[in-house]
Image (cartoon, rainbow, N blue to C red; front, top):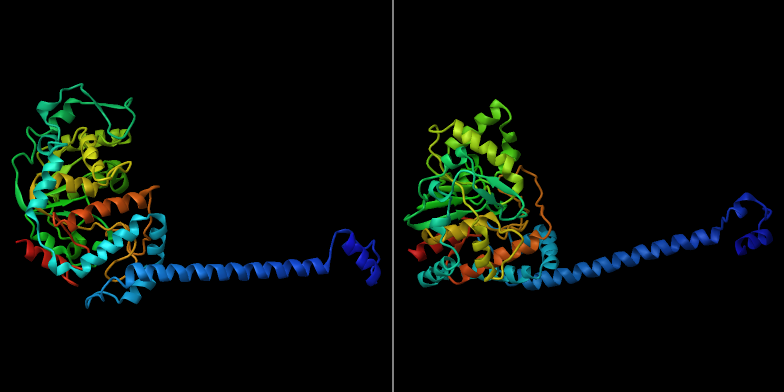
Length: 418
């Protein structure tokens, strides 16, 4: 009404004009625009201040504590600019990030001082052995199950079961393929994008035994990850994602050729983790029965071992909803190897050598952005990395993070451990 009265007194328009009746007021409109502009300016200033605070914090925690990188690594300032978003997000998503990056910085600074501590590793092996007899629980065997036996799932409701059939039992080994097997130096190769451009392939090829995760491709990435595979896991979901559940002849041929490349390697199939894999497991069983004698790959089907492995890692304050395949392979390797060297264990979206953004997996298509696909993964990934970092700091195993042909941290570690 006040605007209408002002218009009636000072404007040639009558107070009954529709603009007045509709509540139009030039002074009010101007005030709204000014307030909006001021709000935008204040928001921009606040964002700038927050960015400056974050810059100073990250520079203090990470940049200043890290030495200048080798000839194949980017400068510290380049690392900041290209890795800022991922570092900042992880820093505030998970408190463990700062401690982890500080530990990484210390490793980079002291790379030439690392040496293998056999006593520490033997202690770790004994700790794990107290919770699970890995050689005897590595896989089900024909003598350990009977036809019609009901298997429950580690991560599903107890109401879900899988009935052991004749075909499934016929695919089980007579004895565990790792029973009484012993290797000097082993490599556990994860699938992190940190391996992209690492040129670690030739090093990985030289190990006595190479563990890989989830049937990861190696042929076209051999310069970075090598080709040698002595054991790899095979999550049943891989059949759905990459081989179309073997629905066509071409799908079946592709899967057969992929398996043939493994030669005599162990294919470790965790069929009893989730009930959702039951249908795929049956498809796998039918396929292997059909091609019996045509493939050299050794099949291993673990039973319900995760409760024991989980119990061990809880003592290391690591108890996510589900342990990663990488940490599982590390656990299995502890029973077979005198030394373990880890590759491809880096759960963040930036390269600590160059600061460049990384894909989630080294085999992801070019341009694929790093994303966490499961809620709570950043926190769990930090805890897994911290657990491995602790073992590395105790000289119980070697964690290779830099470029294999850059700062040569891993080469120095290997020479010091011999």
